[in-house]
Length: 482
Ligand SMILES: Nc1ncnc2c1ncn2[C@@H]1O[C@H](COP(=O)(O)OP(=O)(O)OP(=O)(O)O)[C@@H](O)[C@H]1O
Ligand SMILES: O=P(O)(O)OC[C@H]1O[C@H](OP(=O)(O)OP(=O)(O)O)[C@H](O)[C@@H]1O
Ligand SMILES: O=C(O)c1cccnc1
Image (tube, rainbow, N blue to C red):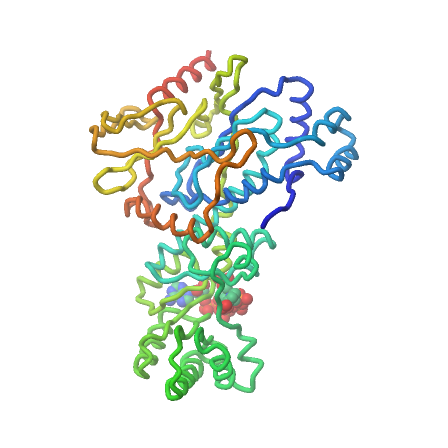
């Protein structure tokens, strides 16, 4: 569906470096890792999203005549380099963690293995796509967690930072666990459920609230959620809704889904009062939906207050991830291939220990407790290391190596989670549908311990290095410090 050519969606410096590599180097094959350093909102995990858009981007990479002409006009690129660009396509390999997976800081979400000019160009767009969708999928997952099984409707399009953020944000929100979106184009593009109620303008356009409700119920008897706060929620809105539901019941109409939406005032108080009124009128299955600047913390608090809300419309705070507006994924060189075809590990050191990278051609194994199926740790190792689940597995914290855990052979299982997506420039991976990814994401969250899922001070999941990777990292750091 998305066949946009985003080739120039890059920072200028990627192109100036590309020209520099073109003039000074052999275009060696290199490895770049995409990883992030902290979970949004001090959470215990994040959600992988955006891979399908990265795949589209890579497939459509080519410099059109107009693109080359535009670059020529900048006056900084040679004709030889522009000629190279006009024949450019991506010829490398890409590995990635599948969308919907739970992911943790420091592990490579994507690994790009390609000639340096190609690998450098794609940095910006890959980060742009992955950072946005991981952020919103993770936010959605937190909001869904707070709702304790109630449905979350994604209502944010009007407040998203432009059309793309609205569309791909809705996609990511569905992956994170929302039950539907009000965004119709997202519904069409990603084949996800669209849903919604009506606005205050509907009520205000009729001579009175009762007539507005009655007409809405006549038109949409099977998805009849009436917005009750236009005039006075408890004195007018809820009684008028009950009057209309009673008329429907008397006429033998039994809607599949019906109820009210609260959009202002004290949502705990109003929902309890409204629940009582609906129940007393015999509408115990009427759903009370709520909206108005909600987020995971407010929903959590409303649950604690005993709010009788069964469905939540969440807009601004979700689609913009307002309290944590960026994901912080980075793209770092980790190895360069020598003339023997061997990958030589590279490391970036920093005053800040957090920013020291993991060198080499790596992969990730997820280690599960055999009995519970829960994640024990992720193990980053060299891609050619092999493991046997019958052997004892030593896990140690790379920042505090004395913290060791020994898993006896047979007590754990391992799964490689970095999968091949492109091989020699060809896509060899078929993305599941968004709803399949959402289903997978739900299962993924079942592999987290409850302590990792909670909103406040969650336990982190260990992301460890294999002995061999740890030793290489330490050796490179020692060499650098000499
Ligand atoms: N019981 C509650 N506990 C905590 N926060 C609540 C509760 N009920 C509502 N809120 C939140 O308080 C904030 C203010 O809501 P309120 O309806 O008073 O103001 P408002 O947003 O200005 O209303 P309006 O949409 O009519 O302009 C909203 O974010 C709302 O979700
Ligand atoms: O509050 P959000 O989480 O963004 O959810 C979506 C909001 O959008 C609609 O109103 P709109 O914001 O257009 O108007 P309002 O602020 O006057 O309710 C709707 O009634 C919700 O309140
Ligand atoms: O359908 C709704 O109720 C809706 C949609 C977008 C924003 N606010 C509410």
